[in-house]
Length: 54
Image (cartoon, rainbow, N blue to C red; front, side, top):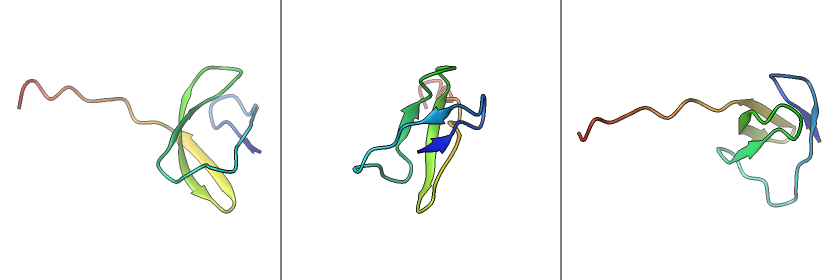
């Protein structure tokens, strides 16, 4: 388990966790990106950008 960078709550992690995977914090509902799995670290996921049809 690791901590949410937004609210510091414990975020449960599973055995199938992969870098770049997106997970949700159970407390604040922030979308988190897995940066590494050993040790497990999270960052706030980037906001999706609009491509304006390009």
